[in-house]
Length: 240
Length: 240
Image 1 (cartoon, one colour):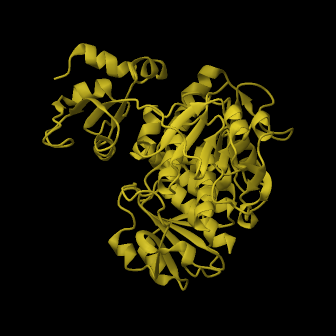
Image 2: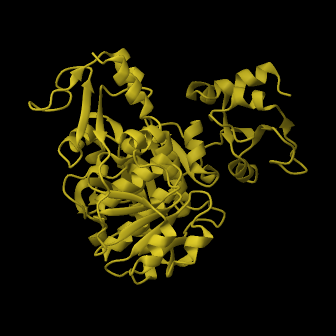
């Protein structure tokens, strides 16, 4: 059973405005929920359509009907469980490692995939420009597959952040220097730009090293998607 | 103006069954349409909501209204133009290069991203198991960003294809040998597996070299998404 006021509250969390106002976000999918339950994230409420899908003997979800779940879910085919967590405080940034910075990433799926990549490649801090899509967007949470629990995502004035950073600032550009032939230090910032327009001119002026992924196909090929480009660059950074 | 029967025909192309029956598929977005117009793909019909969006002086689109476009589009926010093309014949496979093979990829966006990656990294042939999502699915076409024009995508009995191939068969596995330390030949097949289950046991028995992308984050991290894993492996293959 889920009361009407709670349905209304969770439905409001589909929108960024109310997530920020209430300091809450929601997650769907068994694997992701179970990962967040064992993380620093604080649980608000937990729902499942059948007993035993999620939780433990200390954490008992409310059992709700398929129809009730449909009312609160963001998925066309809800996965049987949904959890509401508090949005955690952003932690201070560790400048002793590579940091990924995003300049106006718009697609929630791309952001989620990049969070998952940071987690895989041991990047603990992701700094986003204020106009980057919200990391608690349901589609971002979905695509991040629980990696949100291990990557510290913060939103800030990106140009100010880069201007104040002591680290070298690498940026992905179509016309940059081949990443395969670039010197990559032990710690630095890697800036990835907007899906359609790349890195903005304001941020470009703060980049110390422009890098690119060489193209092996025909010249007419579109640029790479920002998430796949991030994958390749992070792999190169860690491989060495 | 677009006649009712044509609206009905294009709407039917949202489904694989009718795409195969009619040998047609549709594309949206100016950039992708213009790329396909200059490729080996044969045009069936072309629509735009304002003059001059797409086409050339030889190829004149029909002007249709926003409401008409909405009726035939697969997008929530249609992009102003739509083209119907004939599905081209699959070309014979070039075994003198790396070939990517997909074992039951289900997500149309992942397939589109992999087609775009093949194009970027000069892989001209993509062999898909019969149960892989259709490459003419509107979401796949969208994510491939015109690369469909340059990558030869075929569907076949994958185990038969691998059994008959003289090339070494590499496969991506969580527990494979680090790709960074693997010998990678000049030509081979790279098999990528299903999003949830990886490479199936039947296909696994045909793999000669299991490779993996080492993980640098904490051990609990989810596996990488199949499109980002493909990006990293193709980058490694071409870098050398």
